[in-house]
Amino acid sequence: MDYQAHILKECMESSAANPLEIVQKILQHPEFPIAGQAHHPLIAGSLISAYANAAKADNKEKLVEEGMRRANTIPGGFCAGFGADAAAIALGISVSVILTNNVKAESAGGRAKAHTLTGMGMLTVANNSGNRCCRRSTYSMLVLGANYFKNNLGIELDVVSEADVKCPLKTKNSLCNGEACKYY
Image 1 (tube, rainbow, N blue to C red):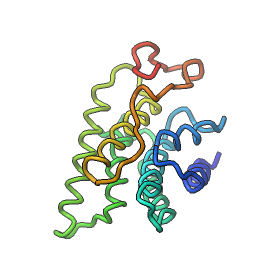
Image 2: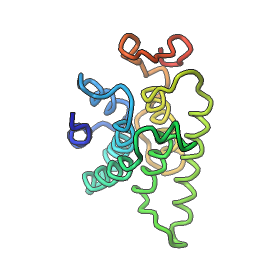
Image 3: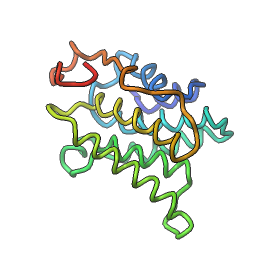
C-alpha cells in the first residue's frame, strides 16, 4: 500500500478540525498497517490538516506534505531502538512545520513549543505499559496534540478526548494489550 498517498489524499479531502476524525477515516483502509512507520506521517499529517482546516490556512497542502515528509524520515523500529518514540516526535514536527521553525534565534520560542509538546508526548508514551502499540501511541498523541494546539498555538481544534477513541484492532493485533489498554 502507498500509505503516504493515502494519508495525503484523506488529509486534503477532509475539512475536519478534529485530527481523530481524520485518522479514523484513514485507518478504515483495510491495507493500512497495524504498526510501523506509516504511523509517523499519519500523526503529523492529520494534526497539521486539522490545524489548517481550523485556521482556514491557504497553504494546507504545503504544510501537510512537509509534515508528512519530515515524519516519514523517521525509520520503522526507531521507537524501540533509539530511546525516543516517533509518535511524540511527529507532534514536534507538526508544531515546527506550522510555526516555520528554524535554527535561528527568532525561532527560539517556536522551537521551545515544539520541544515541549515532544517532551509531553514522550512522557505520555512512557506511561503506557505492555506491548508496543502504534495505534495506542497515535491516539494518545492526537488527544495530547489537539489540547496543546488550543492552549499554546491559539487554534482550537475540535474536542478530542480519550472517550472518543474506540480501537478496532482488538481481534487483528496479535500484540494487543487487551484490557490493559485504555482504548480497548
